[in-house]
Image 1 (spheres, rainbow, N blue to C red):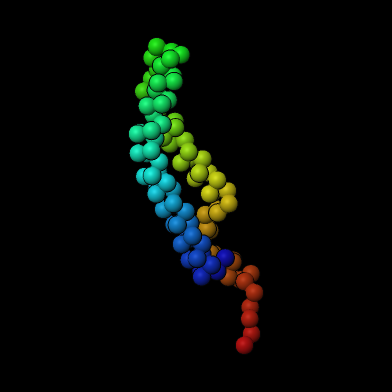
Image 2: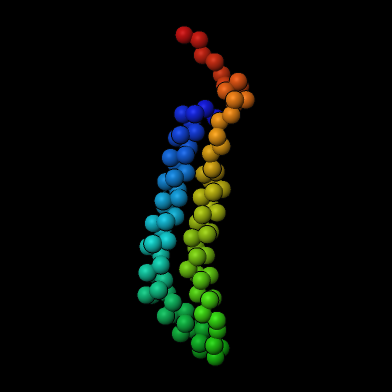
Length: 93
């Protein structure tokens, strides 16, 4: 990977990270306002009590899964090394 390819890949990787941050910021209020009360109501019909920490799973779960999916399709760029420069195709003008 050349330096220019690395810079392009790094920018794309930064955009994926920003997408995860924006997705989390959008998902958190949706979960807290709409999903959590519904989940609480349904769960409390079947059991008397449950640990409040279980709400962390649906808060962070979708974001982690989205991050894993993005990492699979858009892997992190690797810094170019001197060995990569030696293997790069040379163009003659």
